[in-house]
Amino acid sequence: MKSDLIDIQVESRGNDVELSLSGSLGLAQLSAVKEKLDMLVEGPGCFYFLNLQNAHFTSDRYLEVFLELLNRVKAQKSALILIFESAELYDYFSKYLNIFEVYENRKAYKKSGTKKQLQQIGLHYGLRSGITVSSGVAVALISLILGWMITLFVIISTQGHDLADKQAQIIALQNQKDRYIKEIDKLESSIGPLRKLGVVQDTTRLSSFGLIQDWVSYLEYLENTRREK
Image 1 (cartoon, rainbow, N blue to C red):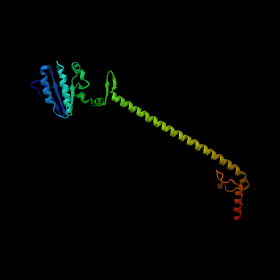
Image 2 (tube, rainbow, N blue to C red):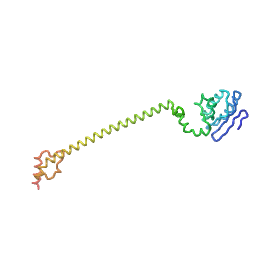
Image 3 (tube, helix red, strand yellow):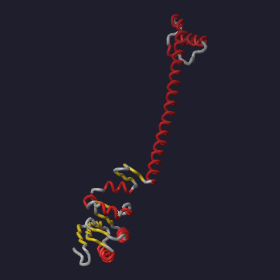
Image 4 (cartoon, rainbow, N blue to C red):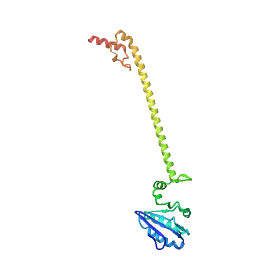
């Protein structure tokens, strides 16, 4: 579609609407351009691509028009993307490049999905500056890293204490085992002479804890057992 007042072409593809503005535009055309753009940008949920590659602006007043248009589009839950790649237009919009979305063409915008998501959370990449983050994102990242470090330290410290406790338990059990072995060996050496005399016939009645502490009583027990037989 071509306007009778100014050279504006409109191409619509689904929710994508491309408005191509061309020619030398000054104060004389300002009102007509504003009126025409306001009339064309009416649909909610649309992506409006404003192609300015072939436009030349002789007045800074158009910047105000585009800012008002951007606010209007956002208010109706739509998006406004500026399309151009000329150095002249980059210089013209230099004050507001951080406000407007600017791409070389519609295809470049479609490929920028990942980049746009990173920019929405405050992560940017530049050829000169490399990766940069906003202050809010930087604070969040630092807090997250500190949280991970504290959690890791607590886990390592807890595991260290548990390991030390287990080692202490193992050492205590080993010492107890050695003590039991020594007691058994001592008892075995004590009953050796009695076994040779035939006094002790059943060593299962003995214990490593010294249940047989009175040998006289034990001998009396053996004598009573023989008499009963």
